[in-house]
Image (cartoon, rainbow, N blue to C red; front, side, top):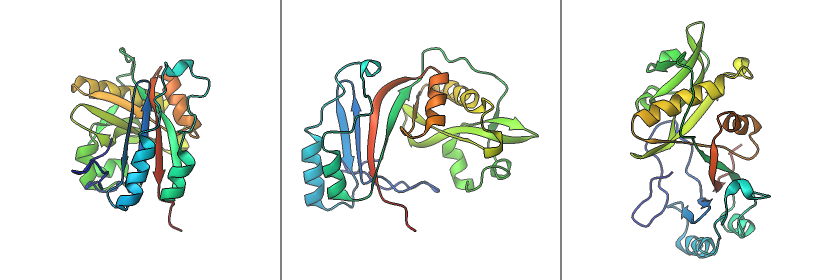
Length: 225
C-alpha cells in the first residue's frame, strides 16, 4: 500500500498529483494486522503508536460473518489523540475468480482526452496510472478506472472516477471490471478499497461481487482551509 523507509515508516510518494501519506495506517485482516507510521512523526510518538498497534487483534473470522465488520480498532481514540488529524476507514476487497466485463471500453494514454471531464490530471502521471480504462461518450472518457497510488509488482489498487453528469448509469462497475481484467492479464492482483461513508463506491463493490478481505483504518492530516 505504501513505500516504506528503512525503519518501516511511510515515506512520501514521488509521483505527481498524489495526496500526502497518512500519519498512520492500520490494516486488519482475518488472520493478522499490519501497520506503519509516517516517517516525520516524532520517534517517541511513533513508538507509542506501534506499541498500541501490536495489541490490536485481527478480525478472527470471515468478514461476511461479522455483525459489525467496520468496528473501530481498540485504540482508535488514542491514536487520534497522539497524532491529531482525522480518521478515514473502510473496506478492502479482492475480485472474484471470474470477472465478467464488457469489451466496449477504451484505453487512454493522452492527457488531452481526460481534460474535458476530469480536471487535475498531469501528463507525468499518465504512464504509472496505466492502464487507464474508460467508458466513452461522444469520443471522450466519462468514467475511468486506473492504477491508484497503491501499487506494486504483485498487486495494484483501483482508482475510479465518473464525471458527475454521467453517474448513475452503471458505468463505474463496467469500467472497473475491465480494468481488473487488464491487471489480471498482466500477472498482477487487482484490489479495490473505499470508505464506509462512500455508498456509491461500496455499491460498485457489491455489483461486481467483490470479496472483502480487510478493513483499512488511517489517520490523515485535516485539509488546510
